[in-house]
Image (cartoon, rainbow, N blue to C red; front, side):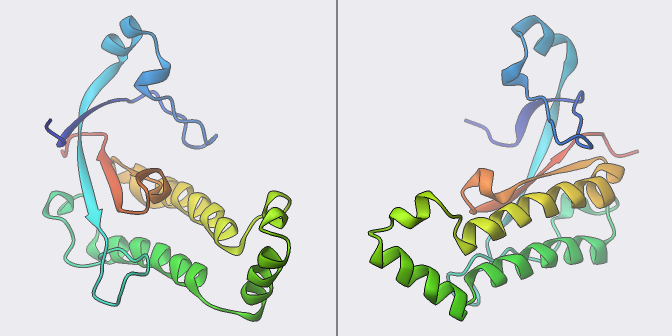
Length: 161
């Protein structure tokens, strides 16, 4: 299977946080409204261990001319900072883990963990970056949580002019 192409519709409403995917459309609508888009994957950076971090450099060559390298590095760096915050050990995280052990992890049915809260921040940050940085450049960043925190996927929505 070739992973460099994906059918994706241009009829997405990112500003209202609703993205229509081809799977949600009827087959005849999908054929009429969709187009073929390239995908770019930003790999994990394991140079500092197994914590979730993504490569800020080198910038993928497919992005050259589409986005400023500094803005690209800042965007990925912003996500890396959030993941560093999620992995950080603090007294609150220690208390959360102790509470989980004492309640046989039933407490986590009622409360969100620190990591889950940060993942929600990551989702909001990706949406914000899409509106401010990537969509004006004809790109769409996919939340890394949707890819199992393995890669950041960027979809090229518009051919480069």
